Length: 95
Image (cartoon, rainbow, N blue to C red; front, side):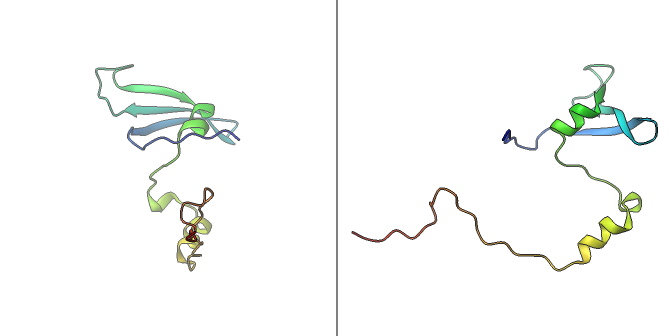
């Protein structure tokens, strides 16, 4: 399994995207948060492969989110038990 832990400290604004055959976007034009002094006057072109690999959080206006997605927020939450794979929270018995 491949995974990566990174802090969320880099933001861009998606300003445009390109559809090929109207199925899914193939390219994304993003405005870099570093300003217009870098790259193409502050804009970068990202492929969908890059987007799928590195984007882990997106803020979207509710008005364009499908109803079936918004309906999830009206469900009761499921509280999961704490997960401690290394046993650091496990009770230690005295010797």
